[in-house]
Length: 126
Image 1 (cartoon, rainbow, N blue to C red):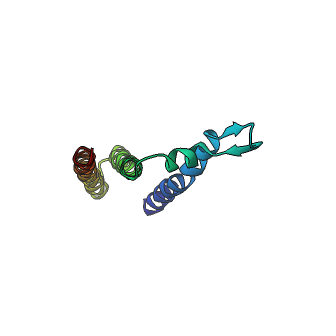
Image 2: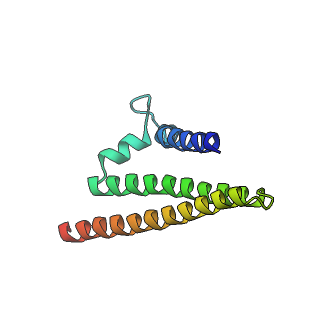
Image 3: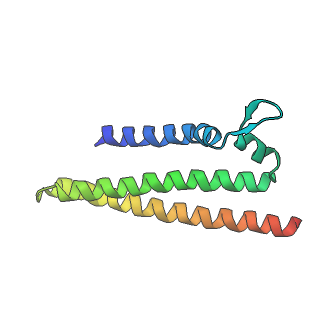
């Protein structure tokens, strides 16, 4: 089970690191005046308010954390289904399910606080 958790975390980190490069290549635009490819991500970041960029980064990070928490809940459910009545495995599965649900509650709370703060900053400045 520890091996699966390590692989799941590694996959989430890899996806978090690779996603910006993927977005940059899929949003690439051709500029005939310069005869070069300009990244849509770089253009949008240079013209975007820093609060908006930070909000997007926070939403993306919390989204990946949510995926990890749902994965933990799924692993707990799978472990419970395959426990075969073994009390020890059932107890471990209950702990995984509890940890996953608590993680989801914390992630949703963090998202609510971050959204409130960013919206408050936007309305205070504008």
